[in-house]
Image (tube, rainbow, N blue to C red; front, side, top):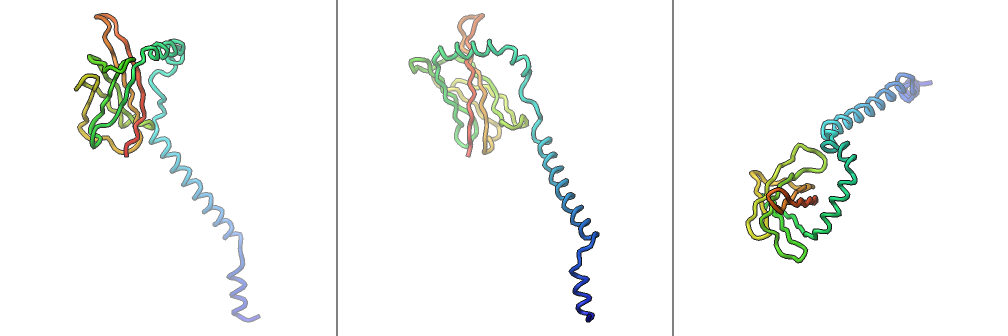
Length: 171
């Protein structure tokens, strides 16, 4: 056997050290990727599903009754962003399509996946049935949820509450 043939046979030989190195490298990459994914999952989601979700679950029948009462009101609402995403506008009309004036509107606009960007909002009436709020900085593009409560005073002690939750896709 020539010297070149001996070198060629040694170069092609797969030893236990090579198999061990490939095995360790493969699992090292898997562990590193899994660790990175776990870090991203824990650091981007707080785990909080909502405030006091256990008690809300106990009051489920009350929630259903409130939704049925709200449906009988027949109010129509539409939430939209103002130009350049600098604010929100809400239009509220009653059953017959007339604008609802004198309402109090407050709530939160938030990202659905995290609570880090939540903004508490109070909308003021700018025209009959039109309520607006402006932001110091514009909303970023992406997915937002407007969770608003419209309160209509009935008397000094009573009020009707209308809950609305609308998803906003901003481009």
